[in-house]
Each structure stands twice: as structure tokens, then as C-alpha cells.
Length: 299
Image (cartoon, rainbow, N blue to C red; front, side):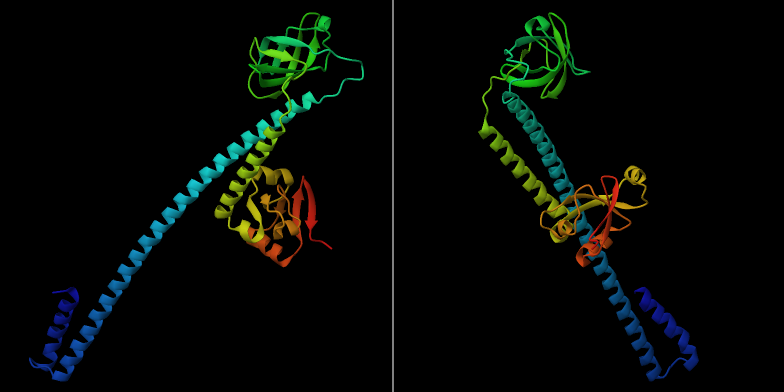
């Protein structure tokens, strides 16, 4: 017997003395109908509670799946950013090396190509010592390319010259130089436009992949062409503002770019929804750009 049925029986038992031992049939039928209605209502509420609990479990599972996907995509973006940073660094090193091959002769007169060996290094302070000096024609400001087995290692600018040796500071580095590495004031490696084109293509592919992943993680990219994050406390203190949004990126030809926003702008005193609404309504937007206040959209 359920609790409700038991309660009904008790109610009936309590009502019996009112009519003696034989209550009117009409009153008895009424009590039975009320009991049936309350029982049906309780069962309906139990079904609703069960459905809500089931829906809640489904929702929690969906959220967990989405969080896992976001975490996976975040890791992929970080990996692509690392690849992009490496590709940019390799490109800079290659361009520095190629630029050295195109260096015009100095006005002071013809210079001979000098070959040397690295005789000492202090990588913690970026110092390289070479086996050639003033007697060999080395002068302060000369640049030497250090290589190992034909591969570029570093570039150093001479700032100290003795008769038999010279020392320079590392200004471009792919890896740490070692004692015994080759050094030359000219680079014999020929130019390689194909290599540069290949690097540029790889950079374009990585940027495209990062942008596609950003589109999936940051829906604002799709509609407004804008990626934002809250400005850090240190940045706000440096700019002297109480609240701000840091613009991490702006898509070309997007509403955000048309509004005048640029990467690294700090939007002042607006929340993200307010900023997106201002872009849509083409309202004036106050920003800090390179530490200076500007108002975008003013006529």
C-alpha cells in the first residue's frame, strides 16, 4: 500500500464516525475521487522530476563533450602558434643570411673575404672570439657569419679587435656557437628564392589553420571579425584605466576593421556585448592605441 493510499484509508477511517458506520455513498465517492486525483498528480510530478533529471544528465554530458573539444582545439592552436613562431624565426634567420650575401662593398675601399675559426665562446653573454684580428684586416663593426658543416649558426658583429684576435657580440642566432666552428666575413651559400617561397607558403598555411580554429572557438570572429580578451591588471594600471578589452586580432574587411579597430588596441570602458553593439551600430569607440587615447568613428 502506497503512502497516498494509506493516507486515504486513514482519512476515510476518520470520517466514518461522522456518519456512523455507513457514510453516504455520495460522500464516499467524492473522497475516493479526490484521492484518485491526488494520486494521479503525485505520479505526474514524479514523472516530470524523472524527466528533468534525465535532461540534466544529458545536458551535463553535452557540456563535458564540448569542454573536451574546446580543450583539444586549444592545444592545437598552441601547437600551431609554436610552429608559426618557429617558422617566423627561421625566416628571419634566412633573410638575415641572404641579406648578408647582398651587402654592398664599403666606401672605405675593397675588403677581402676573411675566413676564421671560433676560438672561444661565452654563450651566456652572447660573445664569440675569432682567430683573426687587426693584422688580418678586421675592423670594429665587421660582421662574421659562423657556420658548422655548412649550416648557418649565428651572426656576430665585431666590437673588440686585437692584433691576432677579435671578439664580437651575437646579433642573430639559430643555435649556440662552439669552439672550432667556421667563421667568414662573406657567406658562400647561394640565394634560394624557392626556399623563401616555401617558408612563406608554410606560414600562410599555418595562419589559415589558426584562423579556422579561432573561428570555431571564438564565434565573434564570424560576425564581427574580432577576437578579444580582458585587459590585464598590469596593462590597465599602465594605461590608467579602470576597465578595458584587449583586441587580440581583427579580420581583414570585417565590421571591426571598418570600425577602425586594430590588433593591440585597448577598448576603454566597454564590455564585450557593448563593443559588439557599438560596431554594429557604427557608434564612436574609445581606445588606447600605443599608449595614446583615440576615438574611432568620430566625424
